[in-house]
Length: 321
Image 1 (cartoon, rainbow, N blue to C red):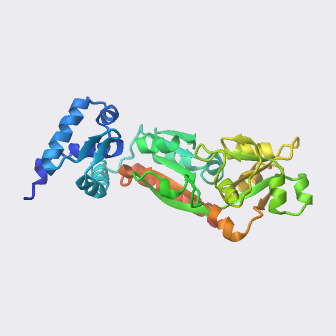
Image 2: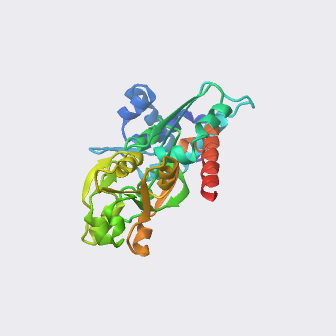
């Protein structure tokens, strides 16, 4: 027998979505700032409505039933549309809202340097918070503590930082695809030698943390060949690695995404940029898709829609230029 939708408290579906994300009554209660008892009562009402337990308790937390997995396919879309409808207002631009974006610093400095001012012009009296991407940023997007994330992911088949390992609760668009390049001080001795993999690996390297990992896809690929880099120094950002590589007191080499060449040119760092000395079929495995990420619940949010469009247009104009 079909049940009438108006008899269901639609707020319960929000709790159902959070239960699917957290798999814990207590965590959902903390997230919504309500008591665990309230969450449990809501779950009881949902179980009665759907004639299904929806979740089974286990040592690993709440395990969804087959029906719950089926519901999950449609639930985010329904909530996104509901959120979009409830946020529709008149044509007056909202004031006093906060934008929080997380992205790699060179990406912001090179391709999106006008974005913060565009936001302030479009949304008067708003606050704009730009933060460097780090290993906590993905969790911030999942928790709803950030509006947009911009970051590169890895293509190597066994990488934990590939697109395939992104949380299902996030949506993304690929803005552009890049490849890592080697950045070498202009008077580095390797530039007088054959540009080969053997010579590339002969010298010490600076690595940049990628998703809280110091070795990244390049090192994974080299490992399959029985090779490795000598990583003598590591930093948390690309600009730190590039600045150190440009200093004259050492023979360190660093590798960063190719777009960083614009950063090197803009800040006049004394570095030469070269493609990695590996076969193209291997190089393709190191391609870096750069993504704009957002929580599914914000897919129809007017603020997020506008932000995504601004970011896409700025990146597209830069890449085409």
